[in-house]
Length: 424
Ligand SMILES: [Fe+2]
Image (cartoon, rainbow, N blue to C red):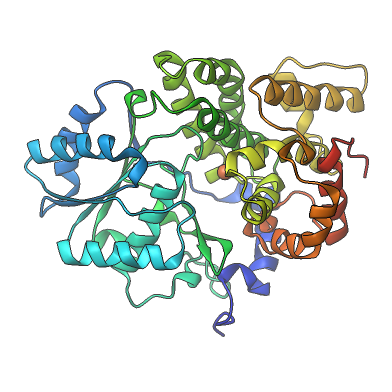
């Protein structure tokens, strides 16, 4: 039976059931993959690109996909690839949280060029757009809403064959989304955020050169850094975690606590930028091979509704997520130990851990309550039911360690409104 043609793969009740079973620790321990691209770390990323790109392209025909905010960086990538003998076109029309129409415009450009290498130069929206463009470019026959990690009936990963058409290089220009290393793309359909997920989306090569993130303004640096913190924190508090993802998550969190304030304070702090690029990538591997948590379901729905930056929103909800999922799991104790946070009781340890996050988020001048965004109870009430619908529809709920209900989300949003403690 095909999935409901009105909906996305995440609406299929069989998929929702399957994920709750597949996430059980016992099953996860039996068999799992670990996905990651080849990484080029540090300075001279463009030299490395010239050496590696030819190994990923027979036709030496590449499409650089980017947006208007980083055209200078895209131009540098173009020149490097031309030096390596590539025919290169640049498409700089990606818009934030790309809608399907934007994706299809990119597919048209790829078709005209007949590229066999796609190079994303940009932040999360650009990398996610590139994955979706890649899908429709390689598989014009496929409905994008069916792009799921596993078939609900056979339990197999359905091959897409993307690499018969093109390979994919990701060059992030922000440090936060980790999209260069994950199998996920978030796009917009009819005004709602939707998740595509397939293991073939993991890039062939990711270039983590701080020269591509130096100069990012403080606010964007802070917001994208909080996205990495949210990814890593969710990833170490989920039963989808494993022996590989946990140390990656813990290390990413430590790097964010240490280096994000420096990167925010000084746009040109090369070392801090480098460490944040690593942190973002490690966090991406941790949640990409494990799971993010419910702060992302809230952040997706709330951010879209109130036009709040993704990183700002998920950062704000992270301390509430930590309290909420810790009612169902004691994984926070390992996180506290890794961060050197103590206390006389489990509750005190959790309180101290949450306080460490709240203090940190405030220290980089980011909000820890909805009210700080200038959004009142009345404004929240005006859209509350739709907000709860969207939050519950988010794909992240498939992976939550705590089964989430409408009423739990309602109470959680109200705690986040004013900064109240979560005690349910
Ligand atoms: Fe995120």
